[in-house]
Length: 338
Image (cartoon, rainbow, N blue to C red):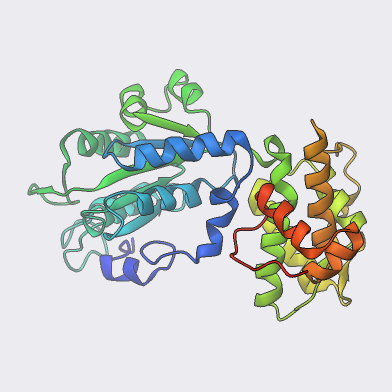
């Protein structure tokens, strides 16, 4: 069996120890949805503590993004943030990855290697898909959470580190506990603070603002300045229920930017399932303000400049600027121009 990754290799992995680009945090940090705003308030308060945190929610909702932001909000922000996907390797490789090993602990272990719990000393470790840990590893992780100590594979020497645990799962861990696939005591240790990240369909007012931000980033990456959405495309995006959540939305936007040959993204450059989804429903508007906000979002998505958007809305630029600020649609300190 080959050995697990070393701490040095983990430091070279941008998904483990390097900071994510700032725009990866935008979908959560700039939400206008009340449920998301309450979630972020709880997350900020939790970040100030050393309590373990359990993030739940469907796949693609941004649990990894929230985990990293909790670390950034915490007093540990200057120390490492490490991620481990518990479903990607065999039991022995995950154990080696987390706890390290000594020379000869298994076939291919030619020298002592520290694990990622040590690499995250002083900082945070994010355990993705925690439900996929085997029973023996659940027991070893439970011991670490209780004592902040562990032994490397093949060693009896106890190691003490100060590492904060943030875990995540898209499984129903209560059901996993009931089915005896997940330790009840570990569940309660992990879920000192449990935060549920809502699905994108539960926050329909965020779909077009997210789309605009992702479109802006994708056009830069793919050298497509000026690309915008047609009104039909905007409507299709708002009707769709997004079973793949924010991850699916990002992929749809990237695909459209790459494939669309013109300056306007029309529905033909959306996946067929999205445009022809029989389960799609119009996003509800609960007030006149909601209707105006969605209309401004749609016109802005279709317009290459603020001036053109203002002309379409038949208002001046400074009025549009003030309404964008009022509805939380712009966080840049631009100056209104008449």
